[in-house]
Length: 310
Ligand SMILES: Nc1ncnc2c1ncn2[C@@H]1O[C@H](COP(=O)(O)OP(=O)(O)OP(=O)(O)O)[C@@H](O)[C@H]1O
Ligand SMILES: [Mg+2]
Image (tube, rainbow, N blue to C red; front, side):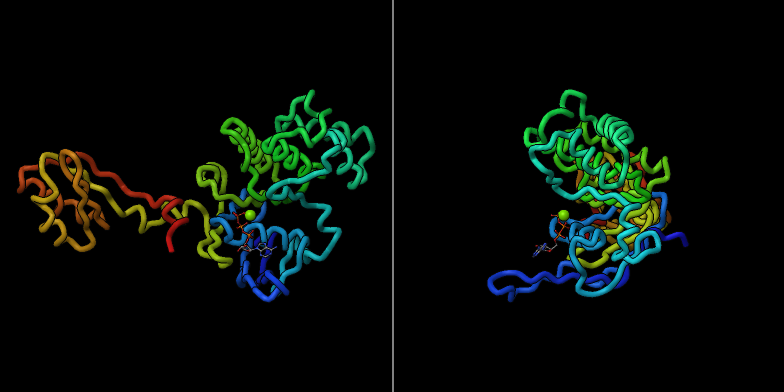
């Protein structure tokens, strides 16, 4: 397999409090492989360990245990870091630089000449929606969403093979989110691998090919969105809406069907069954009680179900 990120048994324990006596296990034996050329969603609630993982991969802090490779090189390999990009959770830059100056500064770190720096800066700031007049303003006057955009532009200055984005949509308004979503989708089309952390489920559904869900520093789920949400088992679940009959009239007989449950509705009821083969039984019970069929809908597990499940 063509894995561009390989994480093996990674753990990170923070020491905190007075005399650093308290310990927090922020990352607990995480093993994860990511294939290239996709948008990979790294999900988890607040404090799940997303930022800890990304910072460790970026070598901004050291793991307590375990190892990781990016593009086939150990994360300690400085040369490899030239080939990747990173946008932190809350980008923080030198306040008194303008957006143009900041981009030029990062361009210089990668050894680009002045003309290339200007060209790249213009292209990227345009792509993230920072208009020309704002590019000459100091970053201290930028809003949270504008800084987020500059952070994203900065992370792409070296045409990275993989870009790590920690909550790239946070702080953006709905229009901004759509623009940045399109930009991220465009990166994948160009062949860039995107590893992005987020807890905005709609962004994941719109963008991600594969996801990992982190819970209390441990891997809770991993797979393609299709596998996780539309798996065979999930698609066999059905919701049957019946009308002209109350839940009370049929509850006893419905609950006789293995795994079936019933919820009252204003002019009928919704019956949830585990398999298509239960439909006939539900319809028979409903007709006996003088009711009729409203609709039958396959139930897909939502990302939200998966996300909140213990
Ligand atoms: N520098 C630190 N010192 C001590 N504890 C820390 C430190 N950084 C993070 N933690 C703890 O580690 C755990 C994981 O934090 P992390 O920032 O990785 O979560 P996250 O998934 O990025 O959350 P969010 O969605 O809120 O950004 C939390 O319990 C947090 O309190
Ligand atoms: Mg975080």
